[in-house]
Image (cartoon, rainbow, N blue to C red; front, side):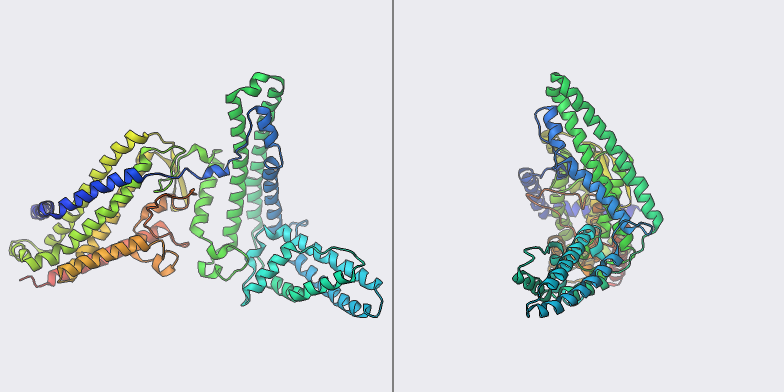
Length: 584
């Protein structure tokens, strides 16, 4: 053990007397200054989920909230959820289902054939029978259009399998959502226009083909029942309670001017209006996401891309589960998003006011790029450089096993990175605390999209540092492996640096690729599995997210396994190659 630490201390001594350390220090100081000057985070974006009701008095706030732009819209959203649940219910009797649509298409087809025959005869002068059938056709098409619009927001589009003519299906969908046939019943040109419209879009045949592709989806009745009782009905009860509080304040304000003009009371009723909307948003999002995941089932991303009229081609199962877990936590604990801070992001405030932790996270993401680059440069030249320079021979003749030599060099390089990381942490903490303060609400952390818990900003920051060290370790080991494998010092350094820069700069660019997303380098950022990856933002002045987006079917343990397996392989290869290398 003593010999191991001697080698480690020796490596640190060599690193810190190299001229490169002064260059590194200069870049490090410059990076801290640049980070402090460029730090300009966007505000949290979830304010868009608030009701944001205007008004300078309680009565004005109440009147604006009670308008069609607010309360009615939110009530309709909750009511639509019940319609959607009924649509999927196997025991429901009042909803529209696939059979209703296919029967309507069959009826329209028959009427259309009759309409074509009577229109041909009308050229001889008989118009009365054409008008009668035309009215039937108009009513049937408009009825179908109404039914389709009713369930279009109920995920009907998810079950429609693509055919080879995507344009035809998209045109058909647009037609169904917009067509409304009316006009002068005596206008023969309008009759012909109906025929042209239907014929041009191959309305009947394409529509029949469309609905024949709808997959039957079976959702367990117990699931529907639970969604109704645990979320819809509970949300409706809480909604009424909030509404009663709003009405009570409003009634008091009508008879008491001091209440009507009191700023604290005005803020109180505005907060209740926000809670009203946030509550409904929580319930509807939970039900939507639970149904979505139930419908998707075990389908993987490739299967989902074969479905049409939907965002399922972009569906991210991980994101959906994370959003669901977050909203269930709010709903179960009867809390709202504004009561928590978000997980750190490089371009957005975690709270509604910037704090030191936001700056520290931003700056250390910036500094970590430099730290890893330096570790890569030092590590990649460590073996090949010393072999070329002859210093490795001096070390090899000492009574040290080669495994201890390589371990000491790895540890020396890693500790160098740790030292700079600690310096960066202390420096950015001082700057951040001085400029922004340390105040933060409890952070809602969503681990692996499965479990929600609160944690202090300090606690989460230490987790971030630990996971940042994992990133440094991975690239340090890779650099030493390359240095061991290549005899040329210059080649080892260039290859190592190019790999890191490619991964850092192109992770987001190629992150959509399934193959790229499962490469070891695309999985080294494990911090993204703590709930900050998909938090809404308002944009970025300078995004520092160098990581690859989370793959839809990935998870923390898979990424950890990929990274761990990669590290084990290259570590083993490093020790084997170095043990057999001729350093005489």
